[in-house]
Length: 277
Image (cartoon, rainbow, N blue to C red; front, side):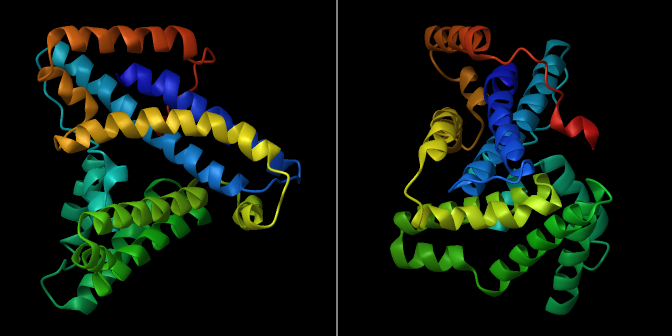
């Protein structure tokens, strides 16, 4: 499953990210490009890193070692706080235990708590690289965490609309995270054009490029979200389901992954994104 995520999903998402980036590097644009860029990179970094983790966990199990789960369907989070409980769990746990709590955590009033959150997230951004955009990305996530502490949007939505409100909260959180991915991935001089292109969806009539790139992002996204949703329903990951489903169904899924890798997998051998951090 980890190989499928990396070779079929992440690398094909990444090709779209690179192609859209090339368009903007050439000082060109098209309506909705920023939205597709955000969605594609959200898929790429998740499938790349969680696939990397699945490969590590699966390889370790071959020699009897159980590694901790590092992702738990993060794009089904209803708030930024929940997202950081589900995304890169080993890093977020380390940041909590060795930065947030020693800085005071939530034990000394809201002022100390909010300060600890911002310092932790800024340093978490800086951990990814000594660049202004990583710092802005960490600051952005810190501000979102504070916003949801002050105004718990997800709780209001769930209280007002029940299950529909929960899905609205998940959709809002997903787009909050996607906007952050633009800061994380895009070159500084293309961020504003990417964001401006999203507004073009309301005014442009020529949507040819949007549809061309969008089809690939849509189908890759469908595979990613459906498999994650099946895991989310059981409070786990899709790969965890193999332990509980009918062995024949599991064999069919494994064969499907194999043929997906053989037919749809990228051949360039793209490096794992997190090898650079």
